[in-house]
Image (cartoon, rainbow over all chains, first blue to last red; front, side):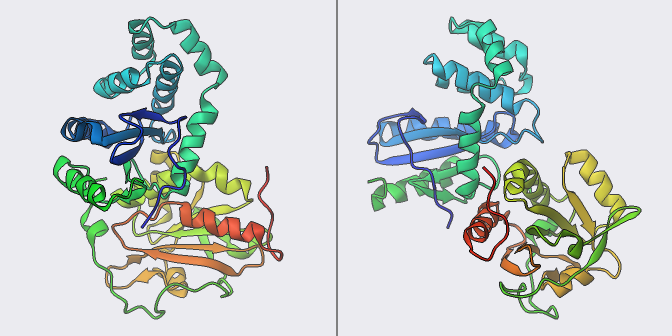
Length: 179
Length: 181
């Protein structure tokens, strides 16, 4: 079974308690339609498990297939550098049908950020090493498509559905692997 | 992540070779069409590692996802000096349309006539279905298989096994090029 080769650290985008019972790592692509569907599944899992679940998001943009994936990832990373990663992440997935520069600028402005700075970030590739590092770690961990989930370090190969993922999370919680 | 009937198909083991050619085997040479008027032979690539990705069918869901991933990982493969080749029994014209549609930057070879002849030599032919298995081979600069793996039809094997094999190759004292920095 494929395992997570890059441990979760403080440099990751995390949502939830650092010492939650279970850690769910997602490798995602903002333009991937399956990731768009899984976004709502993850929201439900977070509601269901509350503080028992730590969510980590890592970039896995398949840019040769999804021309907007990198721009969206840069937008989220830029917002993240200003403390608004999860807001941007959510707005990108909730507006997946209109990914593009106008949306990215609107997300920046909504959080009091500079759309000019965002344009510079895109032109200078300042966030590319972080995004590429996420991607490379995913490839090494056996990510074979998006979304890819790891529950306490083990790749989840079941369907990205609430019931099945909840069962896998509960099982991992009982096993106490996240220690 | 949609699957097709082909992606979900069950394999049999009634081919002339049981299982994929194992590490240590000299990789059988071949010459297959890469474009409608151009053949590519394995021996032309001696001197650097080669990754052979046999797959069931152009346009199928799992194959499309797998090759899209490899297309994205191509710069990393090239850091090892490795050449990636996709091989299926589809015709060269089908490959050409598939490559254009998906923007692939590597060659797809047509193991079309005699159908699956190269795949059979590598133990990578699924005779029950008349397609290649989802089989991976890493070949060193001398033309010897150093790693092989057959994935279930419905499972995209990812690229981690290939990279691990290229790492081992780069670390080997007898091997091919070390990874460029």
